[in-house]
Length: 161
Image 1 (cartoon, rainbow, N blue to C red):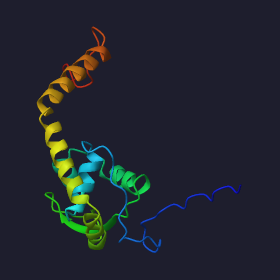
Image 2: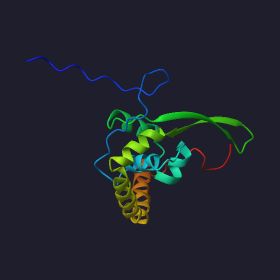
Image 3: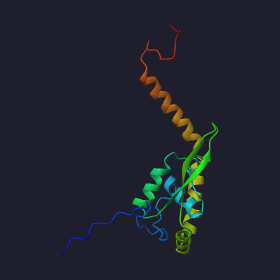
Image 4: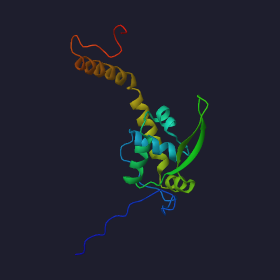
């Protein structure tokens, strides 16, 4: 029996030969950030890192993109976009999106029902947000109390020399 050839790595970099029109696999768990990001992309949204913070509650959009590509086989396009900043600068950011044909093929294969399941699962998870915020505050307070010994001062406390 011959040994199976090693899987080739899918790349989405320019000139990498990736087929942006072939959909990948849908994640099994629907209440995750990864599932929400993919559902938003399948809905035709174009996401930036800042969008991901406000819409999907993650600061790790690049890591989610990597997971969707490497684990689930999606080919996510990245487009540079100019953004005006409040401090007067022009910054270049990345906007992620799926090829319209990939969206069309995924929807034809039943991704619409999966996206609805993701929306419901994420809504259910968001109902626990207040509890998670309280728990985070409790954990952070306990950690803060462990870091400082009695008599130890913060660098910015006390009078100026």
